[in-house]
Length: 117
Image 1 (tube, rainbow, N blue to C red):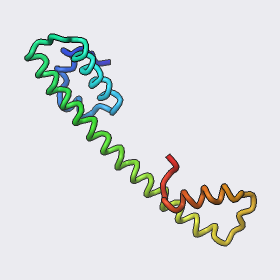
Image 2 (image 1 turned 60 degrees about the vertical axis):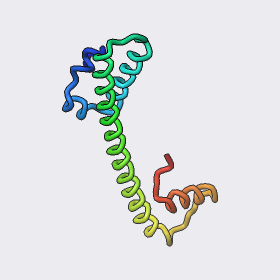
Image 3 (image 1 turned 90 degrees about the vertical axis):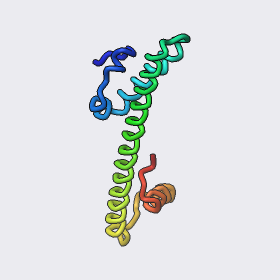
């Protein structure tokens, strides 16, 4: 596991940062936050470099979230298509065994085409 000291964080290369998952990025950001909260009189040059690295980490984390959001939207779209494809097959079939509440939940999911989370 990489060193999460400020010295270790400052040594991170851009390629390393861009290849990290969101959880790891967040851990490094939290380490920087702890550094600034606990160090009331930091060296100005180190503080500036650390701040610059925090911006890189935050930017990478934001980009990672945007990618994850797009992936989720794509999954929602595929799920919506799946629901549409099976709703055509089940229109003529009986809903035996389903309660009105089950039908209502199913209908709500089919209307917005999204998973319920």
